[in-house]
Amino acid sequence: MRRRTFMRHSAGVAAGIGMLGLSACKGSGSQAEQQAQQEEVKELFFKISLAQWSFHKALFANEMDNLDFAATTKKEFGIDGVEYVNQFFKDKAKDLAYLGEMKKRAEDNGVRSLLIMIDGEGELGNATEKERKTAVDNHYKWIDAAKFLGCHSIRVNAGGEGTMEAIAGQVIKSLSDLGDYAATAGLNVIVENHGGYSSNADWLTGIMRTVNKGNVGTLPDFGNFCIKRDGPNPWEGNCVEVYDRYNGVRLMMPFARAVSAKTHEFDAEGNETETDYAKMMAIVKEAGYTGYVGIEYEGETMDEASGIRATKALLEKVGRI
Image (cartoon, rainbow, N blue to C red):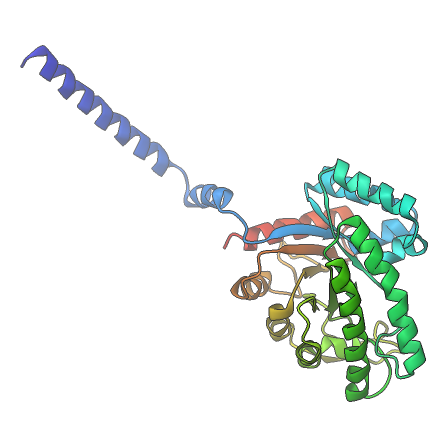
């Protein structure tokens, strides 16, 4: 054999041995390790954000300052999107200096301000026309604040007292008014299933179809599907009428501009005990949604930071299935 031919032959054998060795190395790990390696490279079909309500205990107890929320979200959890709750800066809607500081701190930490959840500004389904209009007017300043912060939406509640049909009629008028105003700012007005009739997805999506505005949509929450409680208001007492959460999210997703990943408790494997997250996120995926999914931890057995981390880990796990 000539030297040149021998060298080519030797190189080929060496390469073959090398490939065999490489294959052997690849096959030497356990099946679980190989699966873990595959999951590491598979990207989520959505982005993860953090709802400020996850820290409601710390914020109400003054253990956290509203201005520190964005930095904490990024530094402690590696999350780059935040969803504010107006309760934690209720008197600051028109305070541009304060809002400017909120915006600066978010931007300095590479955090995007996504939306403001609005509570306590009156019932958009109020039967009294004057009070309904007052509630609408009360929301305008939050649209302005959301625009200033760089958000894409405000979240509102579709509440009121009366029959299902009567409340729906008032809510339709209110959402139409707010939608028109928000359109001038390039923002969305989104409704969460948040107790009462709003937790009935048939009722809520019927309102969406009637309003029929591109910037008026929904914020499906995985956990808020109690329509009626035996207490004095939608948030007290035992639930006596509940809407199927999976069907509810499925119906709401075509109108969704955001998604709320509500969690309470977790089992030993890190799964949420009330919601099948693999099933729920499959519904979100099937709808073609690729936006932010906001962590909203409300549990009692973990501290808030641990609950946020557990929810993030669960979303990352099911998001790669």
